[in-house]
Length: 134
Image (cartoon, rainbow, N blue to C red; front, top):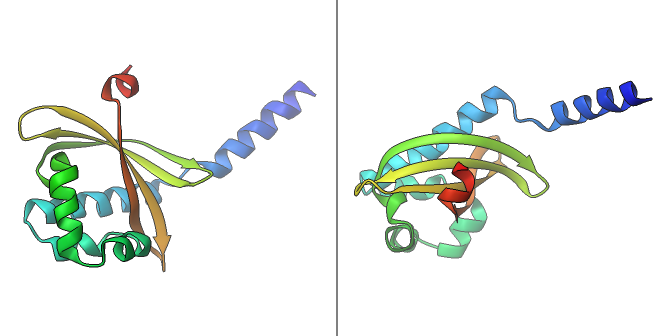
């Protein structure tokens, strides 16, 4: 019975793990949006947002202003590293570590949504860097 439960747990976990191709596609979307912000190309950055985010901000200018003012490390990222991609009940969450222009480290989670076969960013939240680094 114990062996059955271990096998069942392994099968269940394997079914929820994101595929490597998914990980690469998601990282590309996030990196390309960060590159667009660096270039101050808010029109392109806005294209990587999910429909719900696009509806919320209505214009690329509004979206860019929110990022510039609320997420300066995303607007002007220095070093960017990708961490864990987790499949949760509310979607896929990609952990991203960003060092800003001043050298300060930040941990963020990007919620990803698949829209018509393409990954889009449907939310970003800040994490406590000390808590996720430990």
